[in-house]
Length: 479
Image (cartoon, rainbow, N blue to C red; front, side, top):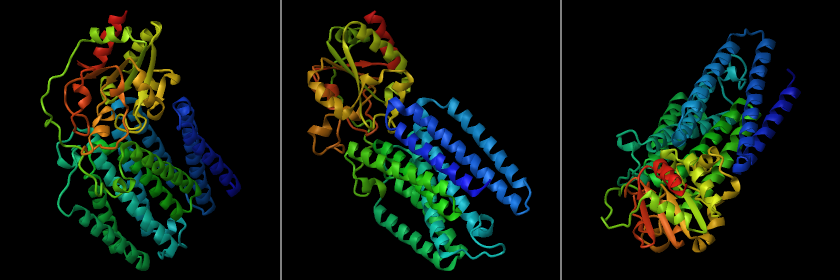
């Protein structure tokens, strides 16, 4: 395989990756974007394997190494396919965090192998273990970013999963005196050891730098509360991209550099958008919640106050007699897998001549785009789905708002309480509608651990129960 052909194929793969990002920018084109992404990765992987085979053949080497690569591709691809088919939509956020951790760990492993035997990667002549200064810098950066990505993603996985009792995996922020000073000292030590490695290529500072980076990844994520997890997921996505790009420079692989840079830059842009949507400082999240107040951990401390409650039949009556209905989906919808029943409810209301729309908050659910994916899975028409900035001005003229499992994204405290931890966070202004129906399993607080004034308003009716069962009963009542 000639280098001209390799370059052409890598260029084609890069175009596919760019088209994938373009497609993923809209729910309407997301499936096409996924197909472009898969095609680009297939082209890049097969081209790289063919290139390695050709280089080994020209050097007189055997095919044993290629066989191991092929086995790894088959085993890894099989595991990925099985997990993808079995994972529930509600488990997607922690799956994404787990995949980010593997990318970071792969970057660290490749860096260790490159430092151990640079000639095997074409960085140095055969038998020469001296790394050029440029490669030392690239390996230094790629290693610590990959290590931080790995350990940080493991903590994010635990926080998103909610299965583990270990305190570091709890949704509440883990804070202690002098936390930020300790993080700063560790960061300086990590950079210091990295510079020593850069100047001397000594193993000890390299290993110390890597160990500190693993610890720093944990310490950066644990003070971030559960309410900020969507931002953390997109930020770790960015970290994994930059780690891959850094290693790409060391391996002199342009495809890895391009793909890593695309992931890193798009993840950073998405993180910035998420921070704006949650009124969080981008640099605070980047540095592990520096200067941020705890937004979780207050669960179970809400004041016991009376609420107006009703049945699914009552809710169906209110909606069927309305002219306009806006549906606000939240994580409770995902947990109950109620998106298909919700689509049926929408169809019934539309048949009655009611204008039905969906309002999506940028950070609804546990990861960016979570609600959009759920609705797309149920084949909800895209023209019924509106982003927050497009529909917020319509709530004042809406007859009924149906809130399904959402909490923090409709909490009026963000607008009305300057002392609230979510003060200033843009919300869906459901409280402005004439009537509000809220479906929740209980009065438990949302992921931010805050009570919600919306639930106690005179215009609000609470309907308690599993979202899927409640929506199905609403459908029967309308029929």
